[in-house]
Image (cartoon, rainbow, N blue to C red; front, top):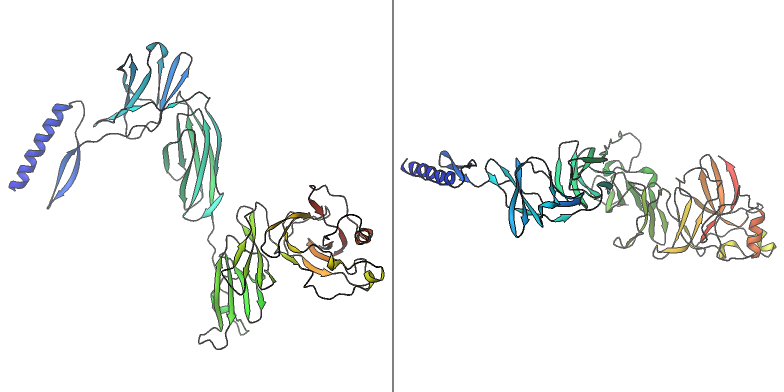
Length: 475
């Protein structure tokens, strides 16, 4: 009890001294626990000062403006005149103040105050000349996974204060009044509003909405009396992507993985299918990967209309290569053209006419068929981009969703012996001739042109070639 009595006397004496020093403010206290008792000790409590204190000379006045902090009740402003700080106002309750140039001030400073005291003085640190306007407000993604962050970016001019609020109650104040970025975690669809203030208390607003990618719910199918070898592996398989090779299978999953299983008949487990590796993906695979030279080539569709092409070695999992992400829709898997590994075909028609077989002249490479009809060419060795590019003829009416098939035209047809892509175009199947390495008026090109019946000429960039259509059939 004696200790508690002593502490109480000490606090009372301290409080008296504080009031004697500044009797215009109330003393602030903070609680502390002393044994079984709660006691209050005096503390200094100051409001925040604005990070940006801006000046805009206009019409014979200096317009002063700042962000009004929530913990401040009013502001005090001083001007530097003839080397001395003179008080302009002791009670400004707005976020702006106009000073006539006749005052002769060369600089200004501001501090925020409340019932318990004032902050440190803050000098002016920005001069603005432009009119207030919103130039840009955007997010780095229109949708993110739940509890992941989105980066908001803004560019404004002539503003004295910038704030961002959300429709869920979050506020972000004292932001850079020129430009900046802010990363915010998002857990459900959120609308963000950007607010900028001018030097007269007026504000402008704009907003963007960021969605949340729905979580995928996996419903396991029913076990039946039929053989279901993959039932117990607990993977959310995209069945269309499954590729079998020797005793192994490869497939993509809805949770963005490329997976490799191998059948091990001697495995001491309930399932004989053993997981060999899983590779995380930046998006989803829509079609079966292409197997070539002990590698899998596959296309990845990335949220937001982006895509990339990758390859992974079947021998050494760590050998994994991807192209740069491109702003283009891509669903079809890459198609490999390698004239050294094509099956034998009947080339009698071409040989009778003295025409070199198309196989020896086709442009080798990895062909990437984008949904809009653009075709990119990449190296067979390392997926590096090649200078030539191609496009579908204008007769293509639908997005390319399925992977084109590579085949050689049958004998006794107008496209006999020609290497072609069979392309699904809605309810039609079209045969497009594989481009050849030669240019100019070769005999082969003249022969091919005799049987081409494109609907119209397509205007393409100088280095982009439109593929010839050899035939078309209704499905």
